[in-house]
Image (cartoon, rainbow, N blue to C red; front, side, top):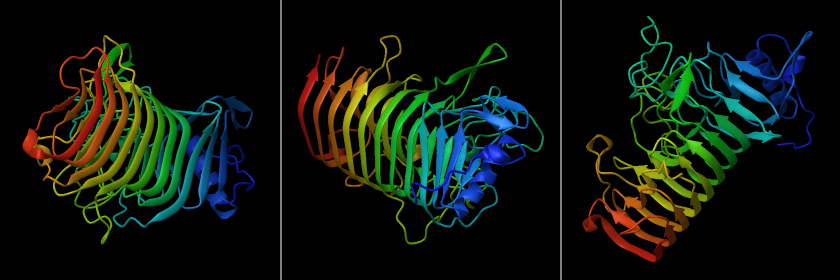
Length: 396
C-alpha cells in the first residue's frame, strides 16, 4: 500500500454520510488506497461534528481508512456494522479473499452505537426479550441478533490492521474477525456496560465483547487493548455455529459452513499483549474457547492488568475452555495446547479458571489481589490437564 498516496475525503461527494464515505472508498481503491474521514462533516452550507451511518462502510483490498478525530455514529435507521470487509454481507454466499486493509484512527477517533439500536446481541438473543432492539415485533424483520450487530467485521482478510480507535456502545462485539490472518489490532479502547439509556429507561444490551477472533484466525497480534466491555474484553472463540449459507441472518458468523475449503478452522499463532481493562458485565477480561473439534494452539498472553473495580469484579481475569454441552463440552486433551500465559494481575473473583482441557502450556507470574485459595482453578478436573507448568503464583 502506498503510504503517501493522496487522500480522498468524503466531503468531496454527495449523498448520505455513509454513501459519501463509500464513494470515497471506491475512488481511493482506484487511486492509491487512502481515505481520510475528518472531524468536520461538510455538506453544502452545513457542517457537523458527527458522521451518521445508515449502512456499513465497505472496505475492499488495498485500502487504508484513516479516521482523523472524527465521530462516526450509527443512525437509528441502521441495522448494520460500522465497518465491514466488502467481500461479505447479505446474500453473499461465496466470500472471496481480500488483502491489505487498514483502519487507522488519529486524534481521538471514535465509533459509537445508535441512540436507539434496531437490534443488539448475538444470534441466540431474541430482541426485545433478552437484548434491546426497536425492531422487536416488527413484521418482516429478523427477531434475533446476527452478524450485522458487530461493530467492525472482517472475513477472509489477510494483512490487515485496526489501530488507535475508541468503540462506544457497540450493538454486539466491537471487533470480530473470521478466517483472517497476518494482522494486528492495537490501541483500541472500549466503552460498553451491557446497559444503555433509551428514552430514560435502562435497557439491556448483550454480547458486547471488545475484540473477538473467531474460526480460522491465525498469525495475529493483539496489543494495548483498554477500557471496559459488557462481555469479555478480549476473546478467542472458535464455536462452529455457522449458518448453512454465508451472508444469511441466522447466525453471528457472516461466513457459512465450509467457508474456506482446505483451510483449517483452528485458531493458532496469536499473541496478545498489554491488556488493561475489565468486563463491566461481570464475565471475563480474556476468554479462550474452542469446541467441536476445532483446535486452539500456540497462543501467547503476556501482560494483563485487570482493572475490575471492587464493586464490579469480573468473574475471572482469564478463562480457558468450558464444559457446556451446548458448546460441545470439554475439548479432547491436546486440542487446546501450547499456551504461554504470564504477567497477569487479577482483581476478579477468580484469577485464572480452566474450564476445559489444557496441555503443554506454562502459566507464570500471576498476582491475584484480594483473592485467597488457588490462583489457578481447575474447574474441569485434573484428568483434562497435561504438562502444564505453573510458577510465581501469588495472592496479594
